[in-house]
Amino acid sequence: METNVMVGTFTAYTNKMTTEQLNVFSQATKGLEGVDYTPLAVSTQLVSGTNYRFFCNSKGVYPNSLNEGAIVTIYQPLQGQPHVTSIHRCQ
Image 1 (cartoon, rainbow, N blue to C red):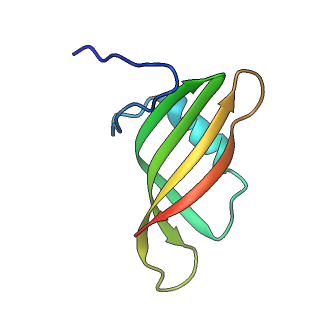
Image 2 (image 1 turned 30 degrees about the vertical axis):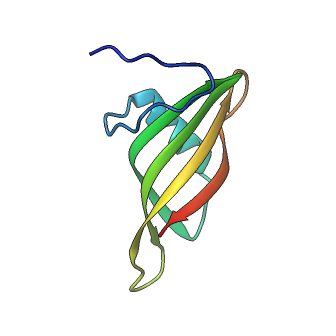
C-alpha cells in the first residue's frame, strides 16, 4: 500500500509505531510527572523537523484515577532533543 505524504500535512493515525517514534515519545515525556501516558497511535507531520501527535491512554498516578484519552504533541527538530509542545485531553 502506497501513501502520499505532503510536507506540512499530518498523516493518518496508525497503531503500528516504529522504534524510532517510540524513542521520540520516551525522550520527550521523560520528565513529565503526575500522569502516565501510554501511546496507542501516532500521526506525523514533516516540517523543518517532525511533529508527532500521539494518541495516548492517560492515567493519573494517584489512587482510583480514571483512564482517559489524550493527544500528546511532540516536536523533533532536525538537530537537538524532542520536546512536548502540547497535551490535550480527549473528551
